[in-house]
Image 1 (cartoon, rainbow, N blue to C red):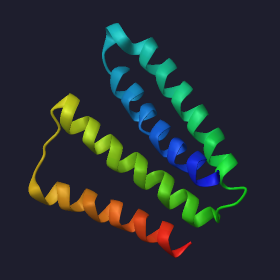
Image 2: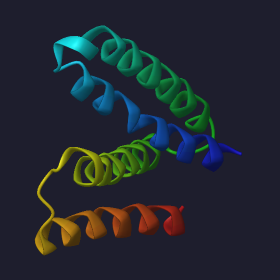
Image 3: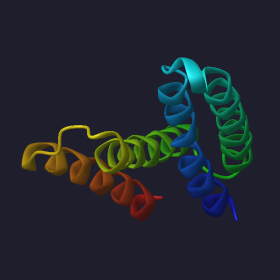
Image 4: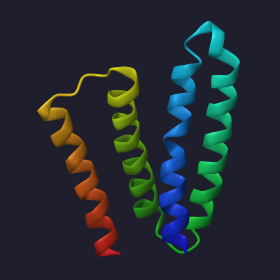
Length: 105
């Protein structure tokens, strides 16, 4: 169950940078802040649950890896962030590292 908590924590980790991006616009500033605080709170709680049975270094690396890769994809798909081959390779390396940590656990 700890790995389920950790994957969910990583997915919720994507929400707070999106909320901060929303907060950059005056008309969505407050909703963006609320979204960011809500997502980071849920993400942190789920990470806390996951760390009861997963080593801290592994849990943190997986959590940030899921969040980084997911936020990259949201940025490319919804915010027009640059999408070059090299950037995709970088994200693939992050995902490969996360998978390696899971397999080595």
